[in-house]
Length: 163
Ligand SMILES: CC(C)(COP(=O)(O)OP(=O)(O)OC[C@H]1O[C@@H](n2cnc3c(N)ncnc32)[C@H](O)[C@@H]1OP(=O)(O)O)[C@@H](O)C(=O)NCCC(=O)NCCS
Image 1 (spheres, rainbow, N blue to C red):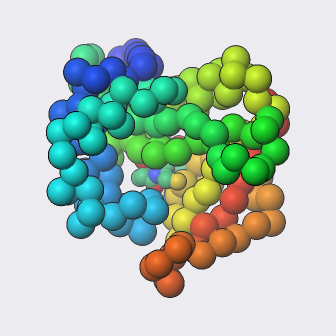
Image 2: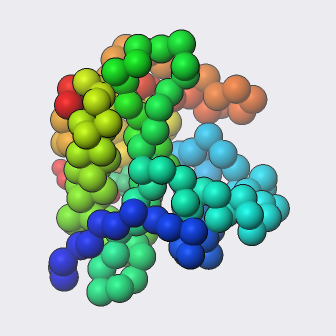
């Protein structure tokens, strides 16, 4: 595979972020908290805000965007040294290669630079591939499994790793 370039997403990436995010939700409905049915009605300014959100990264191979991830904070009342990984997605043709690890590595670096001590994420209990991928990247289940706020069949395993 040609080199993978990880770069911050900027406001001008709104269209590509929208296309990638909608593709992710369409093809992997049970992997994410948000739903295609809701995000398809987002306005341009909502996509611009997501594209320009801090610690949002895109993976490019030969100039084509093939993956997305975002780092962020969790609830204000939780341990302030926790950082979170959100919205991980690699397009089908680039799975099983260097893109996924490069995106996670970028968020690990962001989380360290931001003063975090551990990186957390939630993965759907039905998403065996993603959970196996995160284990390879050093994450382990914390023991917490929580339901989605409204979709009763959807449960998430919390995973974390030190930074
Ligand atoms: C999750 C994702 C980013 C992982 O990246 P990836 O490039 O596919 O990951 P990899 O192929 O390197 O690793 C997955 C591992 O799970 C294994 N695997 C595949 N299907 C599996 C399954 N159903 N159950 C358990 N393990 C599985 C693979 O064999 C591989 O392990 P190996 O490298 O030891 O062979 C990517 O699959 C993706 O974008 N999926 C759709 C969106 C998504 O689910 N996002 C996660 C939201 S939390």
